[in-house]
Length: 196
Image 1 (cartoon, one colour):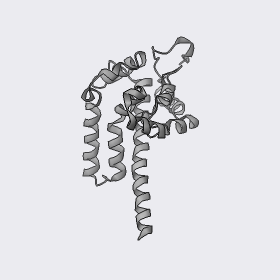
Image 2: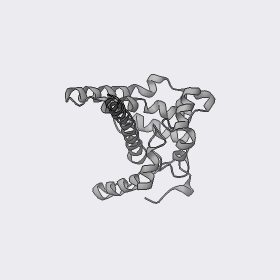
Image 3: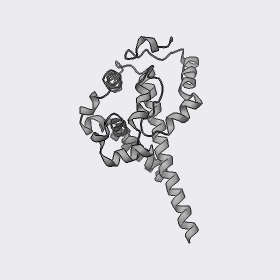
C-alpha cells in the first residue's frame, strides 16, 4: 500500500510539473515567434504582435490592462485545447496541467514585471522557488538584443534552451526552409542589433 501511494504521488507530481514545463516551453515558442517573425499588420494575430512590440518599448505598460484584456485570447485557445484533448481521449493530468499553466502565462509574465510589494507573499514565494518566473530571470529577455529567455512561466526552461542554443538553431532552420531572417526589433539599442 505505501509503495502505491508513493508511486501515485510521483506520477501525479511528474504529470503536473511536466505540464508546467511544457506550457513554459510553448510560451517560449510563441513569444519567440512573435518577437522574431511576427508582423503587427497581420490579420487576427497582428494586434497581439503589436502589443508585444509595444511591451518591449514600455515593459510595465501592460500591467495597467485588465485581467480579461490580457487573457481572453489564451482562455479561448485553452478551452479549444481542452475540448480537443477531451474529444480525442487525451485529456489527463499532464495535458490539463499544461493547458492550465499555459492559459495563465500572461499572469506569470505580468508578475515577473511587478515588484515584490505589488506581487504579495504567495507570488514572491513561488518566484523564489523558480516555479513562477522572477523579475531577475525575466529581465534577461529585456536586456541587450532581446533575443534570449523567451519562456515566461518558470526560471527553469530558459537556461536549458539557452545552453542548447535552441532558438538560434530554430532561426537557422527557418532561414534554410523559408529564406526569412528574424525581423529587426526597433526597441533594441543599435549597438546590440545583429546583422540579419
